[in-house]
Length: 267
Image 1 (cartoon, rainbow, N blue to C red):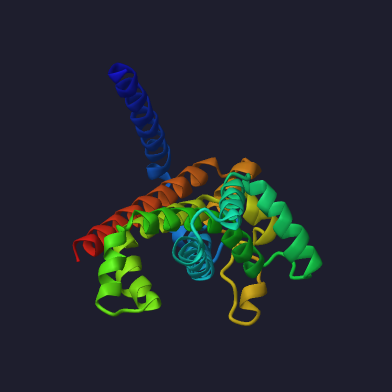
Image 2 (tube, helix red, strand yellow; image 1 turned 90 degrees about the vertical axis):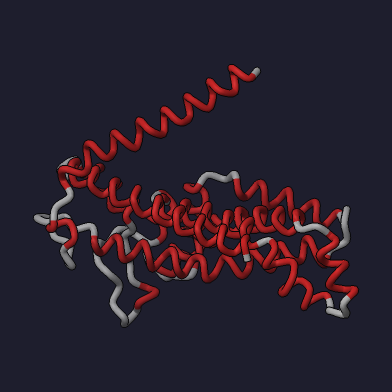
């Protein structure tokens, strides 16, 4: 059994190392200053607008999904009755939503936000669709993090005269921050790497949204940018360079989030 576990670990690590090395070898030689030009043209194939759009979409999606996800998890753990049928239904529904392919969310966002609400391909349509996608992950990870907080923390706080709300925000949630951050990291990774849902909702315009009509402008993230370059078949090398930047961004986010989680855990 030990040999099987080690073999599975070795295969996983080797596969990941192969993918990373393959992307770096094929992408690094083609990272040029033209790829970071402010405006995208067919000559420079700049990824900078897509990079800025990716950051914008990540920020607004997290601003929408994280508070709702944490609030839902707090209700499920702290306020609902343990063993409640409603809680069981919510958990099953959340887990089901977490397993739905992103293309289904994209089609739902297209039919709802793009067509029914008549927003067209827009930033807000993409943000709302991604928020629905990552919300189940944030809820489940936050819920497990809250459950892992020992009951003695709550009992000690109640014994000192603190109310339930104060106990939750001062004692329970800070103790669960490392687990909550892990859910946020997973959400960021899914947002950054998502393409199918955004093609149907945010569109593929390679420019930074203007301040006028900001939320209703069509945008293109790095993942969509890479997909468009590959689908055209004319900019394969630039697509590999984009993949390198995307990989570096994900690694930096995970590294910074890990440092933040460790710092909060020590405090």
